[in-house]
Image (cartoon, rainbow, N blue to C red; front, side, top):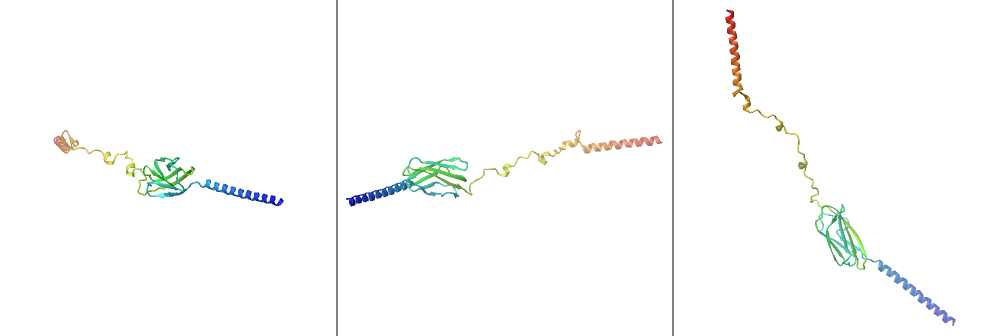
Length: 201
């Protein structure tokens, strides 16, 4: 009687231990399954890439298929200005396409997608564009910046040359005038000398 009772109790304990062990295993497996959300596994271009030209698209690949709802895309430049984009989701890939070419500068692509289990995934991809052939400055050339001088040139300030008409007096050339003056002076002197000689006689 006692032996049978002890055997029954031993079986009950063994069953209870097995059940407890199975419960622990199921709990651990459930926790691991719940924490195994989809993650970002690859990006094109890569994080921190320096691109020699504006990218035509960005491809973000996740570990599981993505839902078509709840996707948020934001592409910004270094000043925080938003850049217009379009996107598509095919299986595990999120493809983001800039509407216009990106000028030189630093950018960040912030994405939020919903994984196959309904879990939201937020990611940020940073990159920069450095195209050596792109025009990086809109400043005018030094020739355009040069302020016009307010001082007149030497040619502009020079006194105007007197025309030929200014060298005449009463319609006669100045040379003729001086010749007449000389004749008059000489005549006057001659007359004075003649009177002096007559008076002396």
